[in-house]
Length: 110
Figure 1 (cartoon, rainbow, N blue to C red):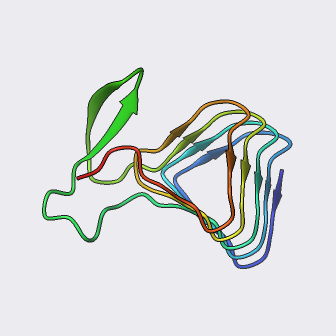
Figure 2: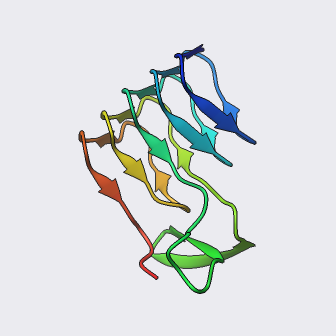
Figure 3: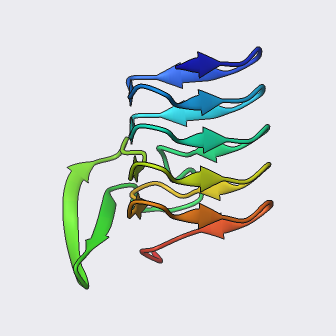
């Protein structure tokens, strides 16, 4: 595992062979093995802009309530997260997912 300078990792599990480049934020997340986060990427864990803060996830076309106001991302093995990409709270990425630079992933709109 490699964590670059200026990163903040909060209440998260980071598996082996994962690289998190400089200036990333990973909050309340589980990050699989052999993941690459390019610089400035964010796994957000809170909806500041919503009145209702509870976070839901989308799994097998079903919305599941987490009951939590702090819940980040679940990132499958071998995924690649581009520079300055944002994974919204509650994001689930399957194995081998590629998130483009500057892309916003928001699976459950609120």
